[in-house]
Length: 121
Image 1: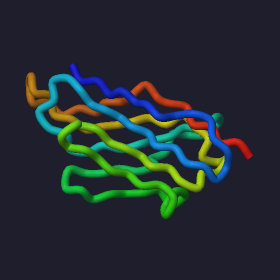
Image 2 (image 1 turned 180 degrees about the vertical axis):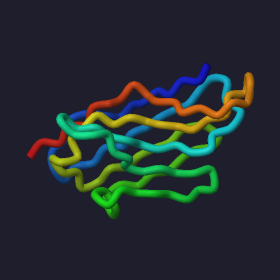
Image 3 (image 1 turned 60 degrees about the vertical axis):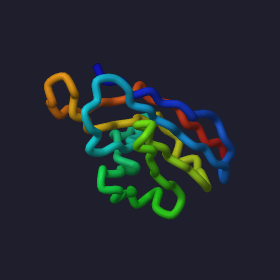
């Protein structure tokens, strides 16, 4: 079984920073990509940032220049450094990973439980 565990969410003032972490564990053969999605009340879930096994990254337009995604391959962990936070960044942030399971080498999409980020004005 593969599990994603998130941490780092919380309440911050506008202009502040948070660093989210997501660690993958279990029967992992390889990780093709990891990323962060978010969902605010009344809105659809959106892709915030993603990093591939090649190291290439993607950022949503609303977070470019403010957020940075990185990873530790040794720890099977992805990070999201969030700077200059705005009230519109308030959402539940979900970690996502595309992983090959070592038991049957099947690819699958895995999700964390979500962590709340609240930015006050």
